[in-house]
Length: 353
Image (cartoon, rainbow, N blue to C red; front, side):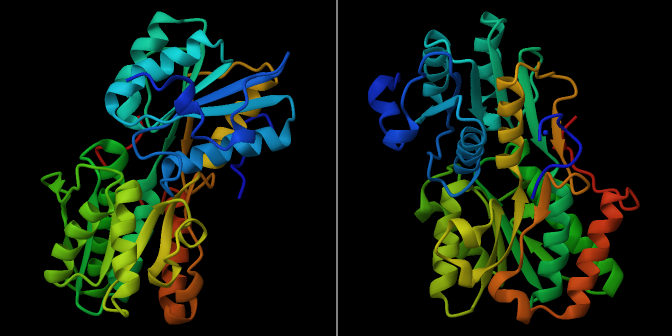
């Protein structure tokens, strides 16, 4: 899946010990005149099966495409690490510094303002500094499809969702999901309930963590106890607690994953109906290739992924493909086309501006 017609190309200080957490051959310093792309992860870690690992995949793809690109990352263990980690890469003269995640917005803004000649990129945020290239994703659109699908498959008439933190890059998924369920109810005259998120109140269930799987399981256990038989965690690695428990439930409930295809990134494909995909890898790859080619990354408009440009999507149904009625599949496909064409408007307070 390539992002269409967006880019011209192809579109605590952790110090050295922390860098050593990356694969050895992927973490070498820049050599000679190579273009250096340096990534600072959010607290979920490089192997979160979600947005951090997706961004790293994009850097790896850029290096595979252009052998004159060097890549490396440093893992943030806590939010207090953001500023020192970003500063570390400024001091190392990285050509491109990528901040992963909306939680890094304030730290990135501060460091970028202090270093106006340094090129930054950020996933899931748009900052006022002109030297920070934003990569945002209208996941409400794909979340809408997931909500409609979940409502159509639910046998209990209750579906659930929860987040890692109540921040826009998380709640945008949940808004779309809730609206998709509402659209199904309106179209079918049904009353499927959404547990874990009240769009009108902009409040719901959260783990307040993106890595602790036991917290994810705890929240989803509560939703299952209330009757949910399909749950969409929007909580990074914490969501693995839900997919793992769903796999062990013997089909009592199933899940919808987010960010990167869960059947490719987790061991729990048997319990994952589909994934609300945020195409971070292609966005990051194209941005780095463009920068390495000497092109200016414009902060405005930056990049916004939508259903129309394949920046967001639903992943294949994998093991559930034969279990989903053909009529429901067709309805989801029609909704995708209508949203991409602007015939159906999906709205969320968290959408990219």
